[in-house]
Length: 196
Image (tube, rainbow, N blue to C red; front, side, top):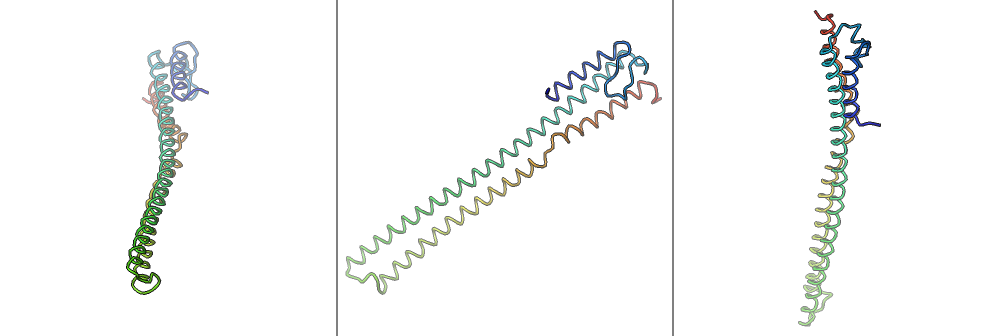
């Protein structure tokens, strides 16, 4: 199947050439013929050009809407990829925080044990508990921040998908055709003498 712009060129050319010949039908103009409507060759050519321009405009509107739809779909996919990346990096950061916390706790235990303190009682135990608490708090913060960022990316992706769903190439082309058909009909009406 031809693309809409090619169809427009063919329709415009066929209409223009057909209108010049005796008894040829002017496409899309209520089936009136150039000879029976009393149109001059120049008027018929102008009508043909209007028809071709209308079809080309509709084809262009269709293609623009298709591109907008595909772009929005691609943006939605990219937003999801970004969300997954944010979550992955957040989990990597959380694991790094856990490793640093474990290293700090190990160093504390070595230092406290070297001083002869009981690691399971009193200040030594409290210090280790605080280290565990703040480590887990930092881990939770890293994961929460990543989840918030991922949510924002997914919300953006949902907006893009909504834009993609709202794009209707056929509706855009149809609107362009209807607008152009009105202009062609108006010209034909004036050229045929009925508008006077």
